Length: 328
Image 1 (cartoon, rainbow, N blue to C red):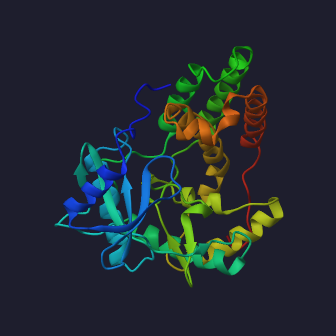
Image 2 (cartoon, helix red, strand yellow):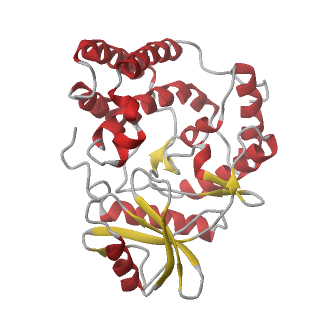
């Protein structure tokens, strides 16, 4: 586990209010903590009753250049009229620093929860994702990373091999399960796709509904295949998935042609996310928010289930990829 995992112990209400004061914003009420594990995010109102959200970035995760690339992408999307929460320009900048913390201020944009079983909403999301990727393909990030096996399998595997949360009796079996996944991924992860700038973490929780989809949280934006922003929106058995893909891609293709070869990356990306997610929690274990939120990480049964899921996913990786309707 990383000794530098916890950095927010000095971020208290006075620090937050002082940071916002430096930008010209006067907190009148609020400072309500919003759900965020990686960063610290608060909603507040100013003296004129305007509502905002302030996001304090976890120190030592992203560099200034990488955060600025996130903001630039958000502003490009906003200019292209993509419904997305973009940082506000305050004192000539979207990125600010106070007491060692980088932070940004956003408008508070409410909305309902995106309905994962609503085909009309899925269709609308497909159209907006096509527009996001239209903007994303204009240029690549130069400071932010690209999705690949090094970041999503090799580095997480090293972290999990040294993880003290794993029962010693299960460590070898866990290592073997990840090693088998890695070997299979080396064989099936290909480069038959063109990278573009992505949302990066496009799961249903990062979509709000306000008479249409509103995308939030570009914190994990990076270069990668378009399929990365699509596959987490699909669920159910194979037949249900085919129907959902048909809806999603028909709408997506109204704005950008989807490379059908990328369907073969669905299960590799799922496997990579499984391992990366576990290692992410381990990296942050010294942050008190993580043991509170993930208490099962200390349970032996949890790790047995993870080993079983790795074996199951390795089998899925060796099966033929999803095939869609003939028109695709």
